[in-house]
Length: 101
Image (tube, rainbow, N blue to C red):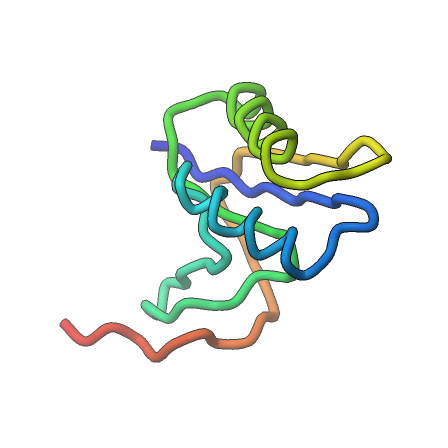
């Protein structure tokens, strides 16, 4: 499985539009947090998502585009970035404590 990160901008979208978008992104396994080596989950910046998938970046981008087309009314084309990554470093707020094993 590959790790992917996606960043989306939908111009003039409301909070309600983004809430719908977040739900639909979850349906294709994109989440709004990243898990560190310490086992903690860290909250990603707004409209940034991570997923684990064997799909290509292009395939995931197309799925995201379809979700936006079905979910968020807009006048301007959305901006979508999908990248595959092996490593990441961040300075983000902790979402939840480490999982105990």
